[in-house]
Every structure is written in C-alpha cells, then in structure tokens.
Length: 229
Image (tube, rainbow, N blue to C red):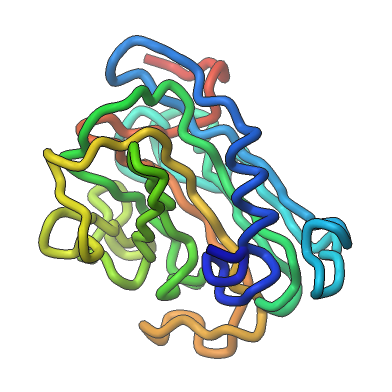
C-alpha cells in the first residue's frame, strides 16, 4: 500500500509505513497507555516520485488546550487541561503528517476506540483517524467522521465525543476478535479539505483532541506530566 493510499494520495504511504515501523511500541502493564506525539515530514527519497514534504506540521500536547485531565467539568479541575494539537498548515497532498503513537499497547483485541475533539477543528473522513494494524500487517482506518458522535461529558457545548465500535468498524475488522499489534493517530488532511460535518467548512487543517480511548482506558494528558488527583 502506498503512502497516499493511507494518507489520501500515493506519495505519503510508503514513507508513513516506514515511520510507523520505526516507532517502538513499549511494553507496559495492561491498560496503561500513553499517546506519544510525532511529526512526519517526508524526504525526497521517501516521497518519490512526489516532492518532499514541508515543515507545516505540529503535533504536541499543550497545556490549556484540552479538557480537565481528571475528568471534571470544563473549565474547572485545577489541572493543566492538556490537549493534543494536530496541525497541517498546507494542502492535503503535502508529504507530511501529524500524529501520535499509542505506547504501552501489546498484541490483543479492542473493545472500543475513540477521542473527544474541540468544535471548530477538523473532523474528516480520514483525519484525525486511528491507524490500527493487525497481526497480518493489514492496517484499518477509523476516521473521525465515521465514528458515532455525542456531546463530550466534560464540555457538551464545545466538544464532541467520537466512538468506534463494531457498528462503525471498517470492513474486515472485528472488535474482540482481530489481533491488534499497533495503534497510531494520524492527521494528514490539510487546509484545502473541509470537514464533512460542516464544523469547519472552509478547511482549517488542524484539530485538538483529548480523552483518547483505548478499550476502557482514557488518555487525558502527555505521559509523565503530573496532575492533581
């Protein structure tokens, strides 16, 4: 599969596959996960026959950008309110992507996936999305606009929750059955791609997400950053 068949075009695919292969999925206790942010800017060799990517990518956990890290209602909680900013400040065709690797995952099955995203950001068919790879090497895509949406419990007026289960799973993926070896979050749709839900009709090229759900665990902040109990 080529890079842009994974990222909506032919050049980005092989480069992204190489990147994901290089990212280590560290072992941890069951249910203990973190989302390690990364930025990918493809070289000429990685993107050939298309041009190299440009430095238009941001992927970072930012204080004040997210919901309270302890699950309380926004804007309270007394925590850093970390959120994961995913930004692509240019066209979708650029050989670049923002993302995060789910660390702590070991081979097993999924019961649920999801995240919350802030209104005003992008929620497209392909970004932000989960790339879920099984034990045969096949990668399944769970795009934001394909999930089930509901109001985020912490801030229902300004955030939406996106949840994936068997009713929204891609063809061939089975919750509770498919053996998953790695999980990534990818953001590769740029400023030329509007949100299908009408939330960002002109195309903004960025999204802020939080409460990343892996089974019954929610990732609310960058690992290692202390929060109040």
